[in-house]
Length: 391
Ligand code: NDP
Ligand code: MG
Image 1 (cartoon, rainbow, N blue to C red):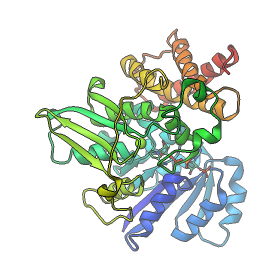
Image 2 (image 1 turned 135 degrees about the vertical axis):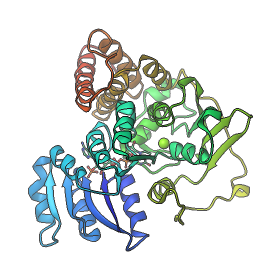
Image 3 (image 1 turned 30 degrees about the vertical axis):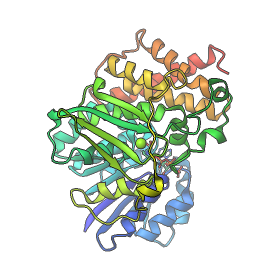
């Protein structure tokens, strides 16, 4: 039996992960499941899977979780410290699917057991890619990509020599505002931003997809996973979300990965790697699809991609700062404090302010250093927000 933990079990990726685990009955012992505010779902999942422990990120919800688990034999715990303790429980396979920088510490700790970390939490790699990779190497752990584009690249690279790779192309649907004018995008509402045309995901990543901040994170994620130079990474707008990524080799060949927009493919791949097992995803009928469209992204309407390039050029702790500033800008948009198109300028202004003496260039040596930059960047973003007009 493989021992499995799922962090972020109550989210979109988490629910899909439990679905995939349930499809291979008798193969897994569930160790820890974590959630946030959705105590009822967490308790239901823990009972159904017979997990050893269920952890909510919210310390003040412990009594509620305990009550929901009464008589089940599942232990209850709460708070960020409890999440880390749960990540230290021995497990063979750990899904990292908490949203945001909060997912960094549990995933980092899970690597210490030499386990396989299935990484959906792209923020971990953006904030602390070199640190995470070094920790995995130190403990003989494996990090497997769960983000669809990166799973696609990983699959296209099987049996290939990374030295023969000329370029890596990740696709973007373009989100709900792909064809909108700048004026219309500025006035976009939360409901419009969250309505992704192809993928059914958590609210935050859906809004990041609309702004292309998600793709900006993924460009950095590509660099960290595969060690390719930023100049080798391209983004292609592909409205159908069928081709997830392409790898170009030095002989001119392009290897593309195609599949339906269903994360259970990438989750199942990471769960069973290096084997392939049946997955309950729709089989593509390319004749019915008839066409696949591609276009270059528009840098004027979607400035996030340029910011990602600047962050990679800056190096050091710029990734941690970028992610934290982006999360703060997203919170401000969700709170109605700023308009949709103010998010990128707010992130850019925050990075400029951090460059003036906050140690942005320091290397991401330790988790503490990364988390400290995450904190400072949120404070600076708040100051920038308070000091300007951002509607
Ligand atoms: P969701 O918002 O659906 O789920 C997030 C999970 O994290 C939930 O379990 C939530 O708990 C929990 N959570 C929220 N805040 C905290 C916190 N502060 N501390 C600990 N746990 C917390 O997100 P997704 O499943 O969509 O995304 C998860 C990760 O996977 C993200 O990093 C995202 O970028 C990445 N990803 C997602 C894809 C998708 O298709 N959804 C595709 C590729 C990557 P609760 O809901 O109970 O509050
Ligand atoms: Mg993706």
